[in-house]
Amino acid sequence: MEYSLDEHMVENHTADVEDFLLTTEYLYEEGMPCMNIEERNFAAKFLPPLYSLVVIFGLLGNMLVVLILVKYKRLKSMTDIYLLNLAISDLLFIFSLPFWAYYAAREWIFGDALCKILSGAYLLGFYSGIFFIILLTIDRYLAIVHAVFALKARTVTYGILASTVTWVVALLVSLPGVFFHKSQLEGSRNTCSPHYPISDAINWKYCQTLMMNILGLILPMLIMIFSYSQILKTLMRCRNEKKHKAVRLIFVIMIFYFVFWTPFNIASFLYTFQTSLSLNTCEASGPLGKAIQVTETISMIHCCINPVIYAFVGEKFRKYLYAFFRKHVAAHLCKKCPALYREKLERVSSTCTPSTAEHDISTGL
Image 1: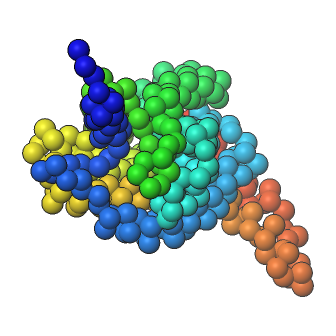
Image 2 (image 1 turned 180 degrees about the horizontal axis):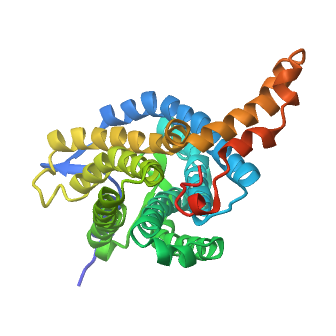
């Protein structure tokens, strides 16, 4: 059978186009691509400054949390261990943002290795963050609902062990994203995006989005609804003000997580399943693409929020922070104010050191 060179070139070109369609975010309507130029311009204009602000405030806030937990609190409880790991999760998330800010403004210039590493850092920060919020919720549940059992279970050793297992699980869940992300030339610009096997690309994309929604939204919501319903029943019976304070910090952290991450989870679900939901037109794809950008930016702001929550809700955290600034910041800014730096830290910390019984139900901050 004759097989001309022209036919061979056409067949190869068709295969290339099919590969391009399955590994990029372009949608096609009536044979024409939806290039989403407006969404790209929006991302290039607004995302870099927003990411920069998140990096500055998130880095400063979470490093202060780590400093206070390690230097002043000295990680004396299971809650301290979980809060420290939550801050590390946020920092891991933040360290990748400068690269994504540049990518949003221009194109990916950092190579394939950094594409995989930073995508992994983003996913690892996301999954480990929500897992540690779940652990904090379970920690509150045990301390208040099963107080006797908690005396034996809520130790620093078990906290370190649970944290280690949590990091391993978060890493395993993040591995598919690391494996499939790669940098390559798409159209006229270099990108860093997931590229799934051609034969099963749609199923992989669906699976990844469902996993993010189940592990990042549905499962934690179910655990937290159960835990806090039991906690509230217990608190209604005992009317203990200290226990109310112990729950308040973790409850606020949980609420803010859902406020900042739920819109992105919903938007990513709609964007991934837009074909099944009959939203795969250029008119629908444009707003969905912009919704992804906006809600993802909002979700990233979350890594700056936890330190603010500690400052407003955690009474002991405010006292330690005040002591730190008096000793290390105000003393250097005002050399002629000896009262600011002669005061010993122990005098301040002694006012917020809990008793042994109180420590069992404290938040650690």
